Amino acid sequence: MSGAKTSGFAAILFALALGTQAAQFPERPVRMIVPFAPGGNVDITARTVAPALGQAFGQQVLVENRAGAGGTIGADVVAKAAPDGHTVLMASSSVMTNGPALYPKLPYDIVRDFAPVGRVAVVPLAIVVHPAVPARTTRELIAVANAQGGRMLMANAGVGTTNHLIAELFMIRAGARMTLVPYKGSGPALVDLIAGHVFAHVDQISSALPYIKANRIRPIAVTTAKRAAALPEVPTLSESGVPGFDASTVTGVLAPAKTPRDVVARLNATLVKILAAPAIRGRFTTLGAEVQPSTPEELGAFIRDDLAQWVKVVKQAGIKVEL
Image 1 (cartoon, one colour):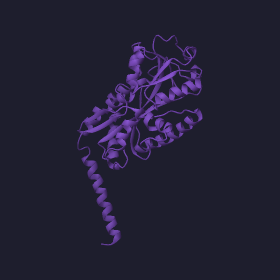
Image 2: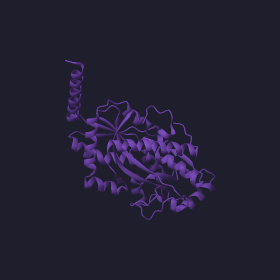
Image 3: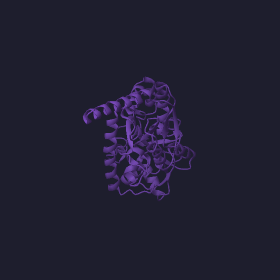
Image 4: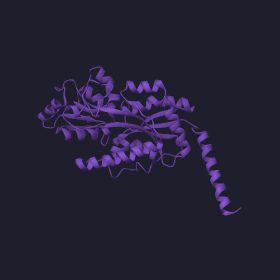
């Protein structure tokens, strides 16, 4: 057999092997790693889609929280997992772009070491405070914080998370001084905010909304350019004296690099299908999130573009943190 024929035959065998692998996937339960503690936006997102994915696959999709280091610990678990589609990451902007923009020495490369599967949703964030804080507007919050000389405690979901970076940018742009307290996710941060151990937080609407509706925390402003549909009465930061402020959280699914393309394609097709279901879309709407499924290529382009944008912001703002 000539070299050309041998090469062509090998290519056919490889393609058939990939097709067989995708047809057999998943062969066992799929682990969906959430790199934050239970109760936050990423955890809620994972637990909203996992049962439907499991039903579609005919295998369980098990949500596993691996919190710590601003999402780095959980992300590293997936980066180093076998590239067969049975371990995936429910990621947010914190892991996909914010953390990598802040930390030059992560144990993985967000572009090189992951295979994008698809976007899930986009979620606005809100600045929320404990009801005891005597502020109902952004200007009042800035005044209260500065009157305390920076001693007012503001929670964030972890060093390097979207919550943290947006809080830093808010303080820089608004001239507000507060002391940031890192947690292992929005869930624990909200618990301490409600208990009055901290007094402010920048959080995704999806996790904060139930407590806002129960009047256990008070929204001051949303961080997006437009008002959030779930909180139409709450002004934007741009409307509140911090012009041009526009930031949100994107959630998406990532797999380890070198996961076969056919397996990624099946993961994506199944994700897109379940996100089209009225019950799933309704659940996200209730949480204040907008479902925005995508192709793997579209999520990959978002990661590259958003990362480049945040690298510039971090440099311009002079934000320096240690992991």
